[in-house]
Length: 78
Image 1 (tube, rainbow, N blue to C red):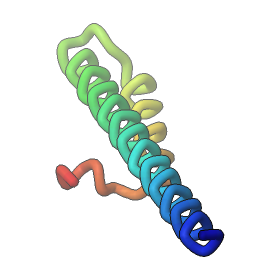
Image 2: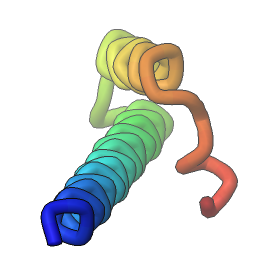
Image 3: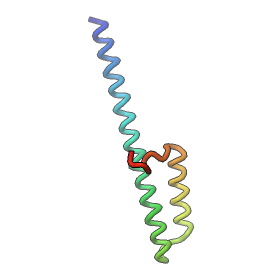
Image 4: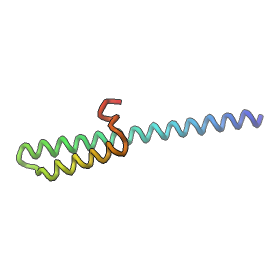
């Protein structure tokens, strides 16, 4: 009986770990999407004359930092 409980506990722990990983992936994708949207908005504002090149550059740096940390998978629709 103890072996069964140990296996059940291990399986539950694996499920929790996989669930946490998936949540982290979704949060990283959302953050990347938000940074990409921010970059687009900054570029659009700059082109219209209502934004600055500094804001566009900062948005680009923020996006590149996110990609350096988490990868660029969110750009590929994964």
